[in-house]
Length: 71
Image 1 (spheres, rainbow, N blue to C red):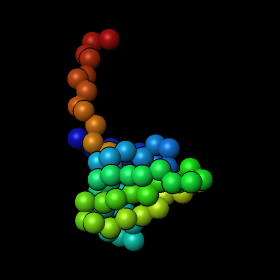
Image 2: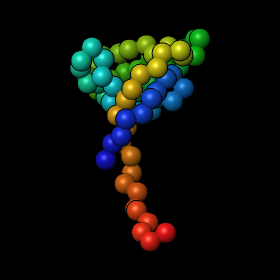
Image 3: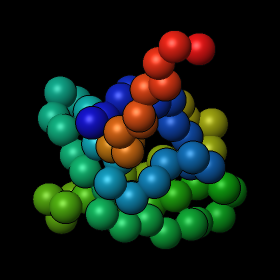
């Protein structure tokens, strides 16, 4: 199960799926660079620099939560 999350350089995670220019990219690895930015490496071999102030939407896999009934 995945859900949309707002991300920036501080909150991006491996496995996040981003839409950039209408194309989906999955974060494979990342490296911190000066100024609080991160260089994202995608499974496609492409890379992208996510600046500290840039905000994007991503799809993030989440562990299914069991619903509590009768509360």
